[in-house]
Structure formats: structure tokens, C-alpha cells
Image 1: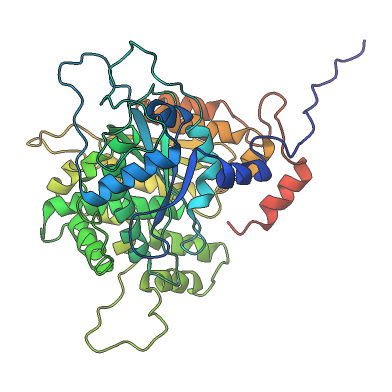
Image 2: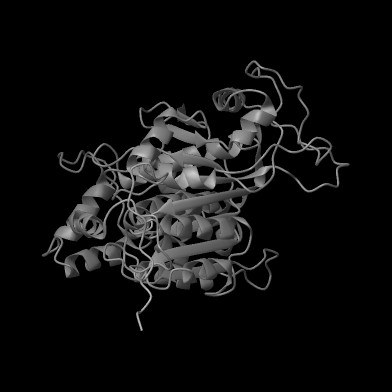
Length: 464
């Protein structure tokens, strides 16, 4: 009796929508992508905005027109009009993803988020006539809206508006300056959200690798601003550090947004404890003899690290001062109450660059950061989802090349955006991870972009 042949995977193709050529074509040529929108004066102070097609369709203009009107409104400091109070229909405004890419503090760029942004911003149709009331009702016009116009009508909640943040890298800037850039970009994104057709109550912050550290630090600093100059409060110390690092940047939104404006924080393969990371790098033989710590300290010190210290100059911050886990561990109750109430940490259990222990340590700190008995703040919801067999770059490199993991990462982020982070280690995020029980052998024939030997070679030479 002949055994049935196993299904063969379809051959890889450069026409696959996840292939590097297709993603690059989408990033540079798609009318849905508006690149290089400024949030500050520095060359790297820009964001890339990904709009679902329906946003521009509902506004009667192009995506570039919607973003230009939003940027003009933010620059002028205008507040978006509130939706009609009499409307009982659910808000059709879209969720917003603010994405902070990684890159070891040295090669980060907003373009690295193009694949995830493409998937999250896809789909959706304009609201049907006679359906839910929009947040405003400007008459459609073929010309771009004027800076004084109202925000565009909002849409069904299946796609997301994605804002990918660019920021200065080391050695041009210190890690604290990078975090100050990220903080300014978050403030800009929050101010622009209603003008882009987004739901101000569903803005989610996603950070990958060191992007999770920078985004987490900006979030802790925003919570620390509520505490003021409380002695011994780690969050207040971060707020002061970022205020100093951002001085002179002339970013209007750097220190004005509340941490509570973020609905949830989603960390992907994140770094949360730089002291522990230094020990891990040296244990792997990277920077043996203290070299790993010296490199991280150079990143913390920034471009002036090699110059002779000036009289009266402040010493660079310690690695603990730049670690979200350490800052939250010593945060005061007022700052803890100001945090978003949902944290979802997604991490590969085979991550050799930022090990799973980083996320586990941050999760443990978050679980100890619950509001006290006299607080009126709701409890923090914290989820840690380990991805079996996934490395540091699996969700962004090897996975998409194999054709399977891009949907896993997108699905996990969507699960959190839908408001279902689960309890403990369960829920929709864990269910999404369980869809790929063995990372190297996804179920069913995947649509590969490359043969397996080439994927393995890419993983072998990848420095992360």
C-alpha cells in the first residue's frame, strides 16, 4: 500500500506580497503610505503614516491630503471636535498603532515597520450610507481639505492606522535622546489621531527590541510627569532625564501627553533591563571582559562619550536609569496609577539577543505594580506570551521569509487591539501563538519567499 505523499510547499516567488521587493514597492510607491511627516526639527524627526484606503475614500481626498491636513491642524494646536453626544451608535473611528522599530540603538529606521504596517492597515471599507454617524460631517470634495477643516469621517474597526516612528540613533544621539525623540513622536501621533480618523481611546504603543525599551521609557516618563519631583520615584527620575535630553529640540509635544492616553503597550522581543542585557551579552562571548557593558554605557552616554569631560558636565545616566523595569520597580503609586492598564509582552523563547528573561522580569515588575487599596485606578492587565522556537528576528525576518510568522505577529497585535489580552498567559494572544506550535515547522504548506537553506543562511549571518 502506497503512502500518500505529503503536501508540497508552493515554490517561492518574488511576487509574494511579503517579499522584500513587494514590500519596498509598497513603501515607496503606495498612495496609502505618507513618508517623512515631521514631528520636530531634527533630520530624523519624522514619522511614516499608513492609512487604510477607506480613510481617504471617506474624506474625499488622498491619503497625503488627509495627513497634510492633520499635520497642519497639529502644528496650529487645534483641537478636533468631539463626536455628537446624542449618537448612540458605536464609534466607527479606527484604532491607531504607534510602532517603534528596533535596531540595537544604532540602525533603527521607520522603514523597518513597513511589513507589519502594511498588514495592520490593510482591509476595511468606508462606512455605508445611513450607517453609524461619523465624528464629523464635512462634504466630500475632490480637493485636499483645508487646514481649518474637520477630521475625516471614521471607518469600521477592522484595519488600523499605523504610525511608524523614526528617531536619532547612536552615535549621533544618546539612548536618552532617542527616547526623548520617541516621546515627542508619540505626542504628535496622539494629537494627530482624531484628524486622521483614529479613535483617541484606542491608541496602542508597539515597540520591538530596543524600540520596546525606548517606547517603554517614554511611557514611564509620561507617567512620572504626574508625580512631579517626588523623591525616590523612578518614573519621576525618567521624566526628568527625558526632559533634560529633549531640551532644545523644540518639539512642542515632547512633554505634554499623558501616559493614560495609551490604551495598551505591546512589547515584541523587547529589552527592559540593560544591566541584565550586559551580563547576557558577556555570557554569550559578545564583549567579553566587560566589553558588552562598555558598549551599552557608550550608547547611554551618546556622542560626547569619547570627548574629554567638561567641568560641571553631568555624568551620563546609568544603565538602570534607562531600564523601564528598574524605573517601574521604584516608581511611586501616583506614577503607577497613571500608566496604561494593559501590557502585552510577546517574546521568542529561543531569543539569543534579548532573552525571554527580559520580558519575564518586566512582567514580574508590572505584576507587583498594582494600585494600592486607596487607589481608584483599575488593576493592570499583564500578559506574557512566549513564542515557541522563535528567535529575536523570527517575527520580522525568518518568519515572513518562511511565509507564516507575519500573520502570527499581526494576529497577536490585533488580538490586543481588540481588547482581549487575556488573563495571565492565556487569552487571544496565547491562542495566536499556539497557532504555530513549532516555529520551524508551521502547519500546512506555507507560501515561502525563499528556500529553507537561504532562510537558515540569513538567520546565521544576522547579527541579532
